[in-house]
Image 1: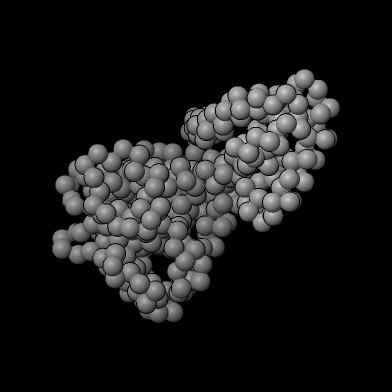
Image 2: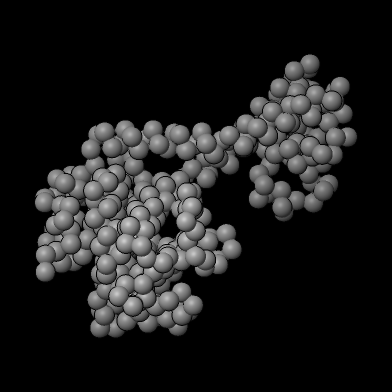
Length: 317
């Protein structure tokens, strides 16, 4: 049988991320950052309107409805606030008023809003560290769903919010943002794809695991059964070329651990890699692994034909 990667790859060069794709990736990240910042900007506007009721900075202490926002403006993160007692929170707000708001004079409300946005910016920055992986997972999910849809298969999806499996609705726009798994049948055989699972055999988190079981049977015992796995893969969505080698080293190590761990149980599931930032040296390494059967399949996340091909492959395994 022809090797599956040959459908979309003809040489190592085909794996490399183009300049245009890198540029488009950075633009997409910027747009996503702006989208995620929108609620914080709206909160800042609401805070400004509410704080305007105070005639002096000290009057802000009497506005109980904006107390959480004052704590944020004081530089206390939501996580840290959960560990503080009420007296500690008051102390933080008092320090904010004394050191920053009172020196601002009549502009204390604007200073308060600036301080609030400064802390919220840190929160946004923290969430953006993982946004590449999130966007990559969304793209792969949409590609797999599309392949299953056009073959008119019944699909179940795993909701990351409540851990429940449900029928994929006819109108599924945006569902990939909350999706952590998919289930379908192939010729009467069960197939279940789950994201970010700690595999006991490997003793590590694996980005993508395809099982030959229905969801209700994927228990801890099943996850320890080497024969239950059809394929395992690594998905790296970071687009910055400067971090490409580091992402590949992490993925390559994970893939090697998978192979070694399953060989001990006389099993050899398919392994695959999907990456957004693939440089020339990295592409040559991946191509070599494909040629010598160390890796079953690979794709560049930024190439639509690659994603369609590897999604079709996953759906037909």
